[in-house]
Image (cartoon, rainbow, N blue to C red):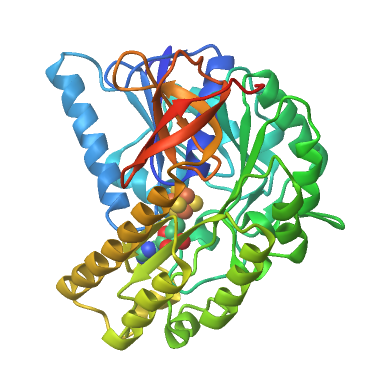
Length: 438
Ligand code: 5AD
Ligand code: SF4
């Protein structure tokens, strides 16, 4: 196979995969390849997700489709690299089954150019080593990014919730050093970022010596040019008083917290090995709201965990009622190979799971609309992120992570004062007020 001259990276799954995908693109561009669309690129990198089922099947069918498209167009099939969490979980299996050229895990993608060269020389190239943090040193500096940028500060997970593959695909909890993060934040700001979302599978477990995430946030808040800081995803057990205090005092830290709870029943939480109770979670929410009364809360839920009874599911609905989320994600339980829950008895029938999921999503949607409606009349800063669907319209985000569309000639990347005037379930309409300093 000849060495590729053009490339395309396609990312699935979480925000960390989006970040990894951007960094792989920068790496390939630095190596001299030119970005192209998926249907014409010589090299396609599939940056995969393994969190729920069918992810693997999706990768194989995607590969088949790309090869067929190339064949029908009379083009050579692209070189295919499988990256991300499916690459980590399946390894050589993918080469055996789909004859892909490169398999590279989420901790090894700094080696992508070398692996692509090996593959071009004729041998399938595989690297699924999990060296903590090695990749970051091998990545080029950030050059041009969107107004809202991601920055990975922590990776991996030591919590071992019984349903979850992340400890196996992303490895153990590791934190990047304070100085490396500050340097990357400065580079992102120079490259156009106004908002930075700090990413980690357990971001609030970030630590460097004595310093915790709140210290990092306070330091980043002092960097000129950085208007907004967010972080995701947090685990309730690592939410320190220091971080709660930061929500009270740090002006640049946005009033939004994604704090997954997964279920409302203590029996289910124990079976999930969540190591917190329903009540512990609710008390934590009370403390956060005391520090920052307007905070928007977000969560993740799993319905139909093995053995979940109707009464236990009702406790999840009750918890949703008690918290009043501004938004939340909910999923049917999906058995993941190699995880402890996959062998538990008491599987819930798919129809039952779907029915519970619908009831849960109805409750979440109701609360999301209520939260958006309660925002009408607020004047807040909106970070303009992209052009809207209609000419003359722009789209941005409120401090509470709501999508806001408005008719204004505001440049992308500006922060402008906006009055929220109308609420829908998924977005709000705004009207520009006085121009705020960017
Ligand atoms: N089945 C269903 N949902 C899952 N999640 C993680 N593992 C599973 C699984 N096996 C959900 C959790 C997590 C989010 C990222 O994905 O809610 O917080
Ligand atoms: Fe999917 Fe988890 Fe991997 Fe992100 S870390 S891509 S959510 S399996």
